[in-house]
Image 1 (cartoon, rainbow, N blue to C red):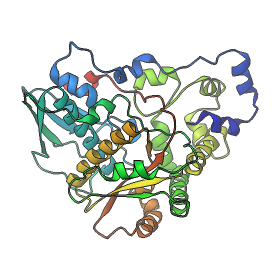
Image 2 (cartoon, rainbow, N blue to C red):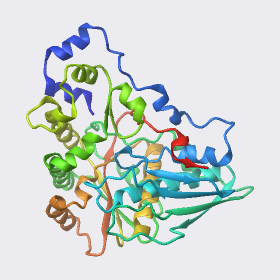
Image 3 (cartoon, rainbow, N blue to C red):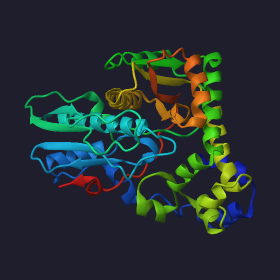
Image 4 (cartoon, helix red, strand yellow):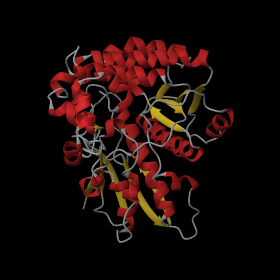
Length: 384
């Protein structure tokens, strides 16, 4: 959450003053162990673990990290979805979760090349789950055979893996430059995917408004709001325990929690400081967005969802290399019933064909690099 914007919500309350007077400006910081993965793996890990330590840094919905990597077959990584880490209310068909499998696979492939392997990826080797089901983890997403490939050239995007972020802050008041946009547009895409960008204010304004409406709708729908609240980790102790989800930390949140103003019940209750803070956050990033982009696939098959994830993370890595910030704003793409009308208007506005699917919708622009989000231990996702 943008701390400056949240301060406007709580105003000059005694809680904020107490945090200042108490000299606690450094309290409740991000636990070092929760972001240790962003320092890169140690040199004494096995090759497969080294590769997976990078893949674990992939962007994924609500930072649920719903990956299971089975290493029981020598020289192979079998990737599956963790059915205990889904988003049934906002992602009822696990489309976004499946995109998150694609981001994982692409970074895995980059890390494999860096380590001297060709990652031979076979998608859905035991059959593809239906497009209208939630639980997609009963069969593997991919079987990845790591084949030694002496002399294989590293991918230049590998160097950006540890630097990549989803930057949720307010962006600087300037549009994406033509030079940077052209570099991003040149990136090869798979399977008839295509990218769109809005850079001029007359083009950005309606998209910004629709993104804002979608965020507010999600917050005003109790079950979808609760899904996010249940996955919000407030304070260093919760972050250290879970190392996933939406993290909020620092002296402001420490005091709000300590005085009972930042609880799940308060966050669900309109009119409270916690609830209004979420609204103000949504209004804030929507206002401070000056360019937007979207990634479209020719259909909405599971294969298209996975490949969209692979393309998106490459785009994110390329943006990182260019000094460009990105942040998915996927609320308007979610398939729960209350969102359908707004989503239809969005698709019509972008002239999306009936069979096509917008898989990713994102803010893009300029801002100083932000801190990394927590990551679970590699052991939490590995099966041996």
